[in-house]
Image 1: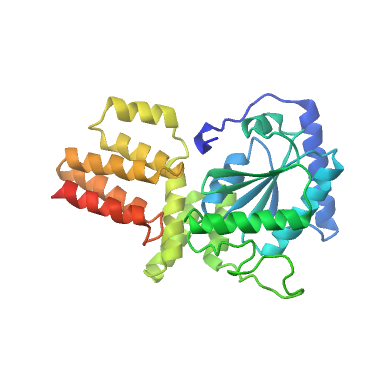
Image 2: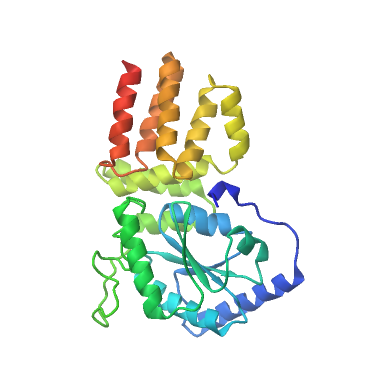
Length: 319
């Protein structure tokens, strides 16, 4: 499922509402007892976009699909809560109750519960389905994060581990040792704003950090991510693609589809679209397409080979 494919169902299911209320009551009880995981959130159709897809642009999200009546799901959830809390915010845990959100579970094509899905920069990576121990979940997550790091799929600056330090997170680490670095104040400020859907404040926080330190590549990348998601808030991907196809000379239409492609992980398609736009336009239109392309480069690590290839094509298109 591509991020843009998700569409909440507005139908009200009383049974689902009851399950959601029971899960919220359980959450409040855990908070009162001081046992809650600060890096976990309950999600349904209404907040899936913000709490899972948009949050995953800045930090990985592990989506746990659970069944409230199942003891296996409870064990699964407890293990993930323990791992997530120990991560210190290196990744977030989003919990979906299959009874409360049947349409969402169907859209995710979940074969059985419990199940986890790792969501990174809007992309979904299915994980284990069925009963699993804490050791099994730890092993799979360690391997998944390492593989995503190797592929360059994780947000810039992420260590590629389930805890905060490279090489950490495997079972059997030194007990009682704090291995997670403190979150940067700018990330805390921006994430709080994003949780409220306030993209302007999050953008301003990262812009201020970049202005103070132009060499802060992590803040620069996250600024580009926030701007991208903000631009796409009210975009219908299918309508945007049709408009771009109907009006190839419309630079704004081509820029919008390039944004959609970047959000969906189709980086080379986005780059090629704007390079083609540069090639067939001139003056101000050409400059707008070129400038937007350079801004999209900020979303990937500076040494990403796809950026090098796109820069060479851009040079050829310009000269």
